[in-house]
Image (tube, rainbow, N blue to C red; front, top):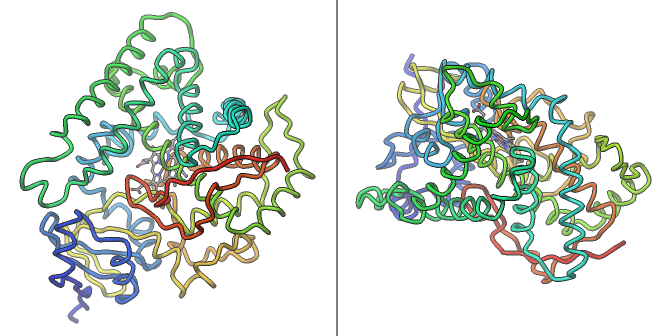
Length: 443
Ligand code: HEM
């Protein structure tokens, strides 16, 4: 039997858009996903045949059931290594297995609890600052600063204040340069890739120097540190050199920072757009949670967890790395030829009316266990799926819950303008397309 081919969507207009933007514009991408019911193929000058997948059955087959037949593609790992270095996000095969075994215990449930006091203290610090100055602040930048302060203390504890401003400066510069320098076909042709960008080069060097100094001075120091850098250094053997520890640190910072800050921004935006849910959350937090910061207990609060999950459904901030088909494969009679590249579109899966009722509505209750049907694996994957699922998933959910709980329990966050028409802008993550300013008011 001749297997059905995956529908091609390679018309001239699409190719022109890809050539000019370096990727397919979000709206176009979604129209195509709808038209071809969650699976289609495009031909891109930079990558050849690419299969775009958002139908749950294919997502779960590739990321879960047959995950050993789909690796992260070499070209995407190379691009990502420019910021992440060579660690979990960019490794494959045996090297990845070893790294995963070494680093994942640091992010297990018990170990991350030892860091929660930092999350409380840093949230308290930034909120007191907002309160004392009363000035309007940029939402995304403030969450980025808060998550950075948390990550910095978690990674480097006492060494952190000395390098804080320098590090934040080069990391934010790297993020924005990297996002605005997407390696489109034209740029590749004239060889202006990330590697050649002078700003990126300068900031990479600065970050590298800072991290090298930190790791070197820790290795010369006999004091035992129980921060994440100390725990990473404890995993060091003869084969694991300082280079690897530096890349682990970079990976943690870049994987955690913008994804978490962006999700926090979307949660606040969605709560503001849905005042009834905001008020109900505040009431339930103020009655059930007495902000016991003394013992830094983190008590999960189910309605808040559903709100964060729903924000991640509507605005999954992170794109999964493209996969490559290792051996010819058929899924439901669809043919995936060896060597083809696969790109996922979680945003479309998460808004597919065949799966979700009122898909564009902010409705956290849909995650109540009795409403949420996990039978359809592959229908929700903001943290990815399978063995390459996000290593910091538990940690991210906990930090976000602690921060939102702290803020919503005490304050109303208000936007300085009433423009409710907020779209997404595709950078490293899917951030709000407007630079929103906020103020806080006591309840
Ligand atoms: C809301 C916050 C976050 C979101 C939405 C998110 C999302 C993701 C996604 C979708 C992937 C999988 C990419 C793929 O399959 O190609 C991933 C991988 C990863 N994430 Fe996260 N992430 C978040 C926060 C964090 C945090 C806080 C950390 C670290 C502390 C972290 C560390 C990692 C690492 C190390 C990987 C690579 C895992 C591997 O390939 O073995 N992430 N993340």
